[in-house]
Length: 274
Ligand SMILES: [Zn+2]
Ligand SMILES: [Zn+2]
Image (cartoon, rainbow, N blue to C red; front, side, top):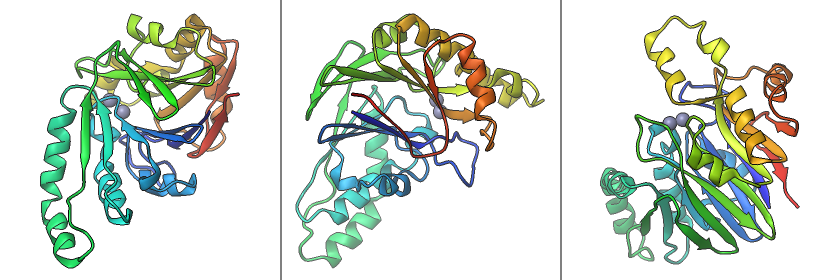
């Protein structure tokens, strides 16, 4: 099983970091977890086109995590020679978001259906709204859904992907909580979106300070990884953006609370399990 950080950015635009998105390859099964800004460019760089995805898993419905879902849907649709329905898993509310997105795409869909004689059906998107405790089989992967705490954003979920005796947890956004601990217990790797509390506190903007309420700090992610007994902690969704050369500083903050391997870096950073 491989895990590729397609986008390590956050809502803050960054020329070098795409928005939140992670690709999990479990054998021949490709799972896209979240679909932020620029996801298809990074997916292409990782050697995958949208038509190859087995499913999309959304952790929550914040715009930075799904802003390019419409690109995934449209490009999969127009590039597939035969109907190729896409299944999108996500928390309650996902149906509403996907329906709204398809409504936004209605003019484009009508143009392409009218223009291409061999294109007869609109894009097919199957939405599955999930709840904590759900266990899914997607291709070769077993996926467990867990509750996360990103309040006041609710409901939000994390995913544990298991394949051939290995497990990786995609925590999405949120602070440490029991649901996340349960999901992470015994996992090989734990991927968490993080912020640097010390740096965020230096920015005198109320709206920026608010984000401290509902995101894990680097240190909190490290303590969650330690409680889980994980071997690898993967940090992503860096707030503020991680400038080149600062990786060791972030790694040291995590290492003070976690003895395992701490991975962070540029978009397309990949870890292999097993
Ligand atoms: Zn969020
Ligand atoms: Zn986010």
